[in-house]
Length: 66
Image 1 (cartoon, helix red, strand yellow):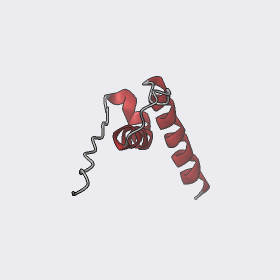
Image 2 (tube, helix red, strand yellow; image 1 turned 30 degrees about the vertical axis):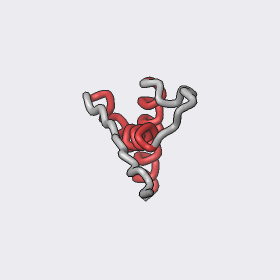
Image 3 (cartoon, one colour; image 1 turned 90 degrees about the vertical axis):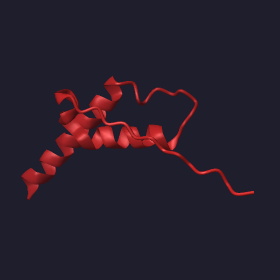
Image 4 (cartoon, one colour; image 1 turned 30 degrees about the horizontal axis):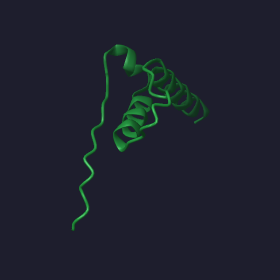
């Protein structure tokens, strides 16, 4: 059980490193659900990011009804 937890932590740390390398943590002043989703998915993809996986998320928030 312990080795599995270590593998998961390493996987997620590598995902954070990949997101950092792509510049997802820079303060652009404009936060959106698409940016947050892309960071989360990139982190979850872990080392797959260096194998060509480039996850991107798009969010379309509906306009409020009048």
